[in-house]
Image 1 (cartoon, one colour):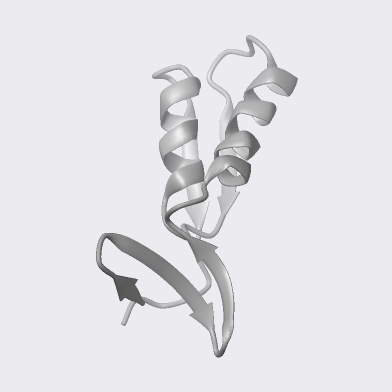
Image 2 (cartoon, helix red, strand yellow):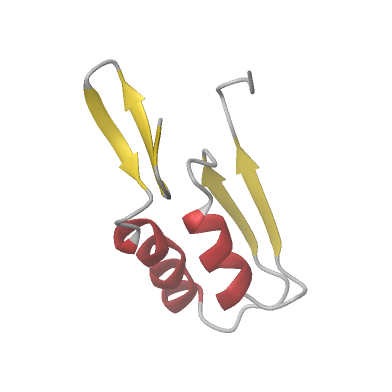
Length: 77
């Protein structure tokens, strides 16, 4: 759903995600990076793309040799 520049992912009347608030999604990647530390060639699995905030954060905080996989169950429409 789109309202102006804002996007929402809805499940019926329930809002699951919103483009205004992305702190928790971004924290998932940064917390994983802190926990993994300096491992060489880390492999990261993200469950679902959502709005891409976790993926964007993971790409920013993990090294270039990291493998970042997004597992999505919902088919694109």
